[in-house]
Length: 182
Image (tube, rainbow, N blue to C red; front, side, top):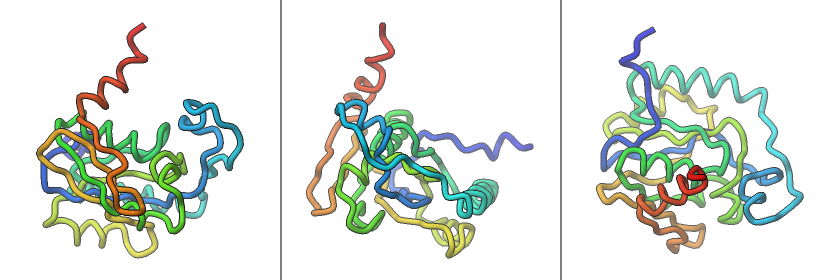
């Protein structure tokens, strides 16, 4: 009803916090990661029909309340692809340093590329974090992943704490656009 309340997926400003809304599961079957790597098997993502309506409703309420700066679904490619798209779209970088809290005992490639349904990356200003958490409530899976930064790059620390991805946004954008040039 009010276009001024629309939220886009491009990161907006350095110093904001990034959250994963929803639960990451070991669901790599049929994923883009498997396609690119030539892998087969694995569990195909299944929607959580109990969680999804509540999560969508509460995230929508947080957006309408103005506490969400940007939001992107995690679908084809998973978390790493979504955050890369957000970074190069906004010309803002991101550091994800808390993957290990996203899902216990999952390997880095699952945390980065699983295509579990009903998940979003959300950017929130530090002064709005409390309001965001209240809007979502205690029954919605929520993980603080890291924060945005001025430098147009993406860094992601693996579960052991070392940087496993460190790339300039321009490189990521080129890799994303290259298949479209045919």
